[in-house]
Structure formats: structure tokens, C-alpha cells
Image (tube, rainbow, N blue to C red; front, side, top):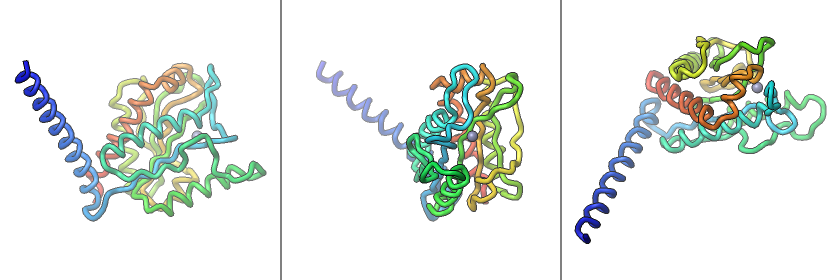
Length: 231
Ligand SMILES: [Zn+2]
């Protein structure tokens, strides 16, 4: 009995060691491929926050800002587990606009850009949700700034992983978009619109933790796909 017990302990120790080594190797690989000299820093931006809730769910009225933050926190876990430094633009339900006076949206975006460009980040993932006039429009889509070569690779690889989830009926190509954040960020950047809150089906997915985990995992994996092809 004692022998079996100690054999089991040894077996558990060996399995744990193998798992930890595998995780470490994956992380180091992901980090070193892009830049040999340092650990990479990912900037994660959960769109909106505070008085700016962003879009609202068509049936439940859920706030975009809340779902964005939940997805951003899932992403944070993935990157930290792989050995990245993570800078969260926000980690609670707050805006970055100072007082709630006129022009707060622009001040919020300016502050985000200040954080993104001032934190020594290597790339940015900004999380948002979409709305459209027709409730039948569904799916997630990644955007980049035209001319941002690495941002385009990020968006395309992330889009590939999202399409590979097979969750939504409509698949998209990554597109270039005219967004303040993309236009003013100085690091490779992607905005991921993770679904349509104007679609009852997408809304149902977005309020479920399993879909948020899937979409975060796709964004994370897609960014690793991109990093290995940066040069
Ligand atoms: Zn948004």
C-alpha cells in the first residue's frame, strides 16, 4: 500500500513536471520568436467603461463595456500563462476620461492612446462588440490600420482562428478600419469586434462564459500565429 502510494506521488510529480516544462517551452517559444532580447508586452484594451457603456444587448440590455472587460480578462490569463508581460488599459468598470463633462469620449481615447504608446508595449489587442441595423448580422471581425504591416498580420491570423471556431454562420476577412485607436497607436494593433449585440443569437453567445473563453482563446492563438511570422 505504502509503495503504491509513493509510486503514485512520483507519477504525479513527473506528470506535473512534464506539463510545467511544456507550458514554459511554449511560452518561451512564443516570446522569443518575435524578439530575442526581451519578454514581449501585450497591451489589452477593453473598450468603453464607466458612463460609456458602448453598445447594448438587444434582448438583455447587457453593456458592451462589461463583456469587453470579461473577454479582456480571459485574454490576460492566456498571455500571462505563456510568459508575456500584460498591460491592461483598464481592469474595472471605469472610463479614462477624468470628469464626466463634454468631450469625455475623445479624452477617454486620448488617454488610452497615451497608455498604449507609453507603456513599452509590443502589440495591442483592443476588444469591442459590434452593432448593426439588421439583427441577422452576426460574427466576429478583426480590424487593422492600413499600412500597419504587423497589425495586418495580427488581424488576419486572429480572424483565421475566429473563423476556425465554427461557432457563427458568417465568416469574415480581416479588414482595415479607420479607428482613432488604430490611427494613433504606434505599435502593431488590432481591434477585435467579438460579435454583434444587435443579434439575439450573438448576444446569447457573448453573455456565456464558454463563448467568451473560446473567443479569447482564438484571439490569443491567432496573435501567437502572427508573432512567429513577424520579422
Ligand atoms: Zn465598442
